[in-house]
Image 1 (cartoon, rainbow, N blue to C red):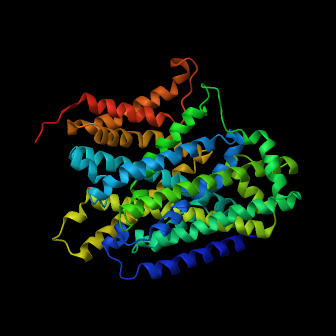
Image 2 (image 1 turned 30 degrees about the vertical axis):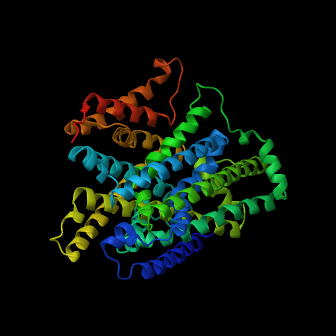
Image 3 (image 1 turned 90 degrees about the horizontal axis):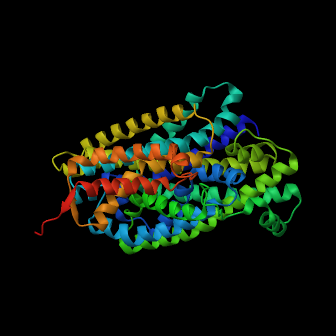
Length: 484
């Protein structure tokens, strides 16, 4: 595919998003931006959240990751399912009962000022790093296949992408994203299904035969039984469960969409429906990954990293139509990573640090102006972060993403666990120190785990260790609450 055609497709898709934005952002106010005026249909939220949860990382990194980890990621996905049940039955009722706009307000009610700011601060760090990493993956593909052909620097590519995201999320916020996510989910899933069909057609193998070949291949190995291995299936399952709890249930971006539903019952319907569909969608991505490996072996294709497998085959070996399908899916995967993160971070800063919801004396116009400034400032941080990530090489992006989550979401897991499952009060001023110390200890444990634990190597379960250390730190500086 020519760079000009790829760029044209990108601009056409972006124009469609702006058309949706124009319809949804009319007469939008702060409540529209933060919680969609609480009128979002649950089934629309559920469908759109599929695309938001998968993002460009799943679209490109999961199929490529099969090369290194086979189908072991599916055990993580099964853990996701149980994590979503915890969110629907424990966290959502709490958020709705307290009528929260920012979910971190709970920490202020339960513990106090410093715990509240610590929780919100860790979310900002987590979501900024995670969203930047997701955006980098997609922008890098556009750079390799489009902008390098015209000798346009990487930073210009990043700047264009960031500006587009700012423009279509600036006014409508969550009310716009609820609807744009449905569009993005549709194109992403369609791209995966059509890619499977085109691979089968190129190899002249029927779909039934493809399933048989994948099932018999070494790529389909799902359960790793060696407990020393970082992919040991029990570790994978519980890691997936708690990754979901923290990266969805304790994440303002994902919960903001649930809080835009009309009531708790509809929010729970959304969560149950979405989680069930997501299991099958992830299995489809892994199946695609196995097919890509078979295609590589058949054609003698080599790539530098696993993240380059899907784009290389789609854009260079399967013909222009398949390349077009891949590109639309990739663009569809890119925008949910950026728009939801930008909106949720704007909400967190505006509500948790600037307290715009608690300033009745301020006019709506003044609040909107401040929100615009915050929105653009966060976009600038994204820009810088993506440029920094472009200097890193190595593991698959999804591997890096979960590793970052282990360090940044662990303190949130510890804080919410202590708040929900104990009735003790803490010395609030010590919370920031505990939340910073726990990840540092985890980094040391992970680095030297082979020497310290007889060959044991930590994987994503480091998140649990981090949460436990935070929990124990809070316990050490706590006391039994006095009865009122």
